[in-house]
Length: 92
Image (cartoon, rainbow, N blue to C red; front, side, top):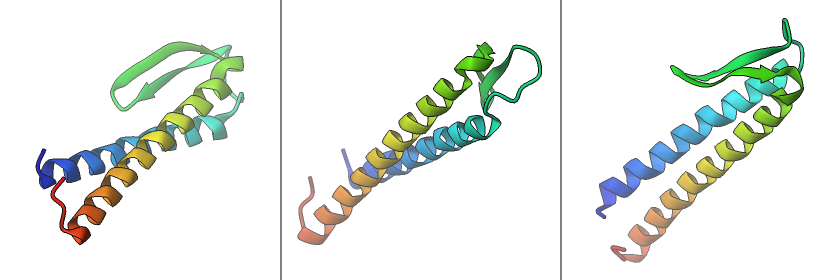
């Protein structure tokens, strides 16, 4: 895998992680204050679930926050690894 592919991968992980994290924050701020018995959850144009019960919204929020954080940390670690390898002269 060349250097540019690794950079694209790092940026993609950070971008996807940020989007998921922001969706988690949005759901967390929504809480259980919804009309009716539940909501539909969409991520961009993708429908995640169209019938999330009001009591399950915090679970979805925590899930999005956790996965978003893990994706972002993974992207940051890939970027740091690339920078360290560039500084030490390795091409791994």
